[in-house]
Length: 340
Image (cartoon, rainbow, N blue to C red; front, side, top):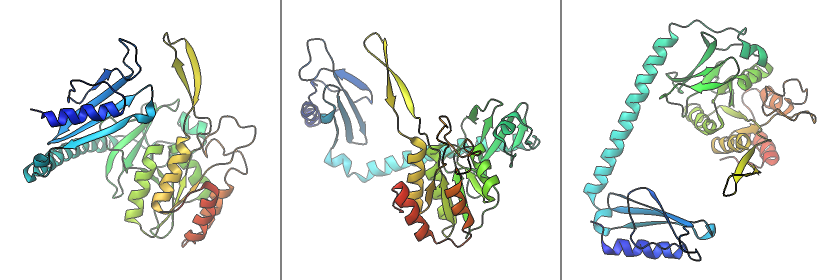
């Protein structure tokens, strides 16, 4: 049973965000409520309440005044410091992690068994021909190609399927975080380049001759770079980011959904690459595009523009050991990144 102290504390905190909450429910779901200034029947706010081992959590959203939206938590002293409670939560967390690992391993075994039956892919595959890249460590499956994703130790945990038209799909249930497809061989004291997609990575490999890790997407750049840095502390990391310079989203507005407006979205490729470089002591580089290019976003798109690879080739030409402090300063000054 929830004590009156917790309920009153929650109601008071909600009121500070302008929400009218009288009988809070801690069921891990969002509930709409009225806020100060609402007309009768109007509900311009919402709250969320949950409990975990004697610690209560809450969130308050005031849609009329987002600046006063807030988070809340409250711990019952006896439960919050209870050793039994802590041990119980750790046990649940370990059980959850073990279940997840078991699931990943089952998918891993299935993928390895399937790949053992597949022939290697060739550069004649339509997608690769269109992108003008070779097939590095890929497999052929019907009219698709399969790219295995390995961890830093070489174990296959997942795979990405690439269709003729370029549509990509990761194997369901596979582990992606920190896994990548490697083109070339890693020199522990040399250079490793990391890119998002396969075509981009293959293009970089063909231009520079350096090993390239395919991180699959922007969100995995940090994880892959971190795993590589841990395994190879002396390696020089170059993040070859996508420049999502045309990030734009259509948003439907209005009560009847009749008005569509444009909303500028974050440049995910650039932001993620800079973050990965900063956290791992690497550098982030991006392609240059011809002034008339209104579509390109990555190094593969820019491969016909002679200036597109100038900065990338500068890093690739500096064989091990690189003067990373000097290079990082050069890169960070340009992209406003401070190495970790």
